[in-house]
Image 1 (spheres, rainbow over the protein chains, first blue to last red):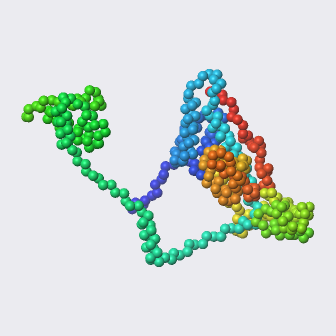
Image 2: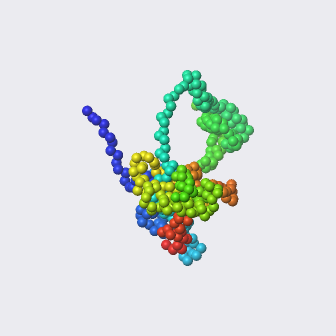
Amino acid sequence: MITPTNPVLPEQAGFVVELEQFSGPLDLLLHLIREDELDITDLPIAKIADQFLAVISELGLNQAADYLEMAARLLRIKAQLLLPRRLGDDEWEDPRSELVRRLLEYQQIRELVDWLQRAATRRSEQLARGYAPPAPELPPAPLEIELNDLLAAAERVIALIPEPMLHRVVPRPLDVESATARIQALLAAREEFGWSDLVGTRPSVVEVLSAFISLLELAKRGALRLTQPEPFAPMVIRRESPREAV
Amino acid sequence: MSPLAKLFEAALFAASRPLTLEDLATLDPEVGEAETRAALAELRDAWGEGSEDHGVELVDIAGGWQFLTRREYAEPIERAQFALRPRHLSPAALETLAIIAYRQPVGRLEVDEIRGVDSQAVLDRLVERGLIEIVSRGEGLGRPLLYGTTPQFLEILGLKGLDQLPRLDELSVALRPPAPAQPE
C-alpha cells in the first residue's frame, strides 16, 4: 500500500522575510542597507535597487503602491547616475541626496520608536486601576428565524443580483453582390480607380470584406487587375478586358 | 494624615486616569493652592515612588498623579489574570506617534512623507485609542487636520511631560544635511 507522504518543499534559497517585519519601503531599504553594512551617505544605488526589486517581488509587495513608488524612485536615481556629467560641474547635485535625507530622517524616527518601545515596556510593568481584563466574548446567540423572514431575505438578496448581461450575436452576411455591382459601375465609368473610391474613407469591416472578396473574385475572372505600388500602399484597381471563358 | 490628604487619596484611588493638581483642587472649593500642595506632599511622603511600605505607589505621570502597582508585582498579578498589561503598540503606530510627538501639530501628508507609506488608517486607530487628537486645521489646500499627542500618550509611556522625550540631538542619527556630493 502506498501511503501518501507530505511533499517536501525545497528550502527557498536566499533570505526569508516576513511581510509584517517592514512598516514601509523606507524600513525595507534600511534593512537592506544594514544587512550589507552599506554606507548610507554613499549608497551603491544600482546594487540596492536590484535587491529592493528582488525582495518586493519575492514578498509579493510588488502590488503595493508605496513599494512600487520607491522601486521607481530607485531606478530613476540609478538612471540619473549613469548620465555623463562634466568634470568640475558645480551645478551637479547628487541624485541620491533626497533619498539619503529621507533615509536618515526615517532612521531617526526608528531610533525614537525604540526609545518609545522601551518606555512603554517599562510603563507596562506597573498596573493602574482600570486595566481590567476585557470580558470574554459571549457565544453567538442561537439563530431564531421564521420561514417567511428567510424567504424575504432570500428575495432581497436575489433582487441585488444584477441581470446577467446578454450579448446577441447578429449575423452580418457579407454583401458581395452589391460590392460587385459597385465595382462594375466604377469600372464602367473609369479605367482605373483606387481602393478608397470603392469603399469610402471609413468603411465598416463588413464593407471592406465584401469589397475585397468581390475584387478577388473579379480579378480571378479577369475583369480587373489589382496592383499595389508598394507594400501596404492602397490598392489600384484597373479595368481589363475579360478573358474568354475557358 | 490630614482630612484633605485623605480626600485626595480616595480620589486618586478611584480615578482611572492621572489627576492633575487642578483636578485635585476641584475636590474642595474651600481650600487654596497652598493647602492643595501641602496635602499632595503628605500623600507623596506616604505613597511616593521608592517608599517601601506599600504595594502601590503614587507616580508623577502625564502631568498628574496616579496610583500604580510597584513593578515587582506586575507579573504575579498578570499571571493570576487579575489585570492585563496594556497591549503593545505596532511599529507603525509607534513610528506615527514619534513623528507626531516631535512635530505636532502635524498633518497626515507630513507623516506619510516621513514614513513613506499612507498613514491614515494608523492615525485613525491612534485617535480611537485616545493617544492623539485633532488639535487644529492647517493652512493650505483642504485645510488639513493637524494632530497632536494627548495626556494618554504620556500615560502609556510613563512620562511626566513631552520634555522627557529624548532631544533629537541626543540621538545617534542626528538629522543633518547629507554630505556634499563626491564625484565618483
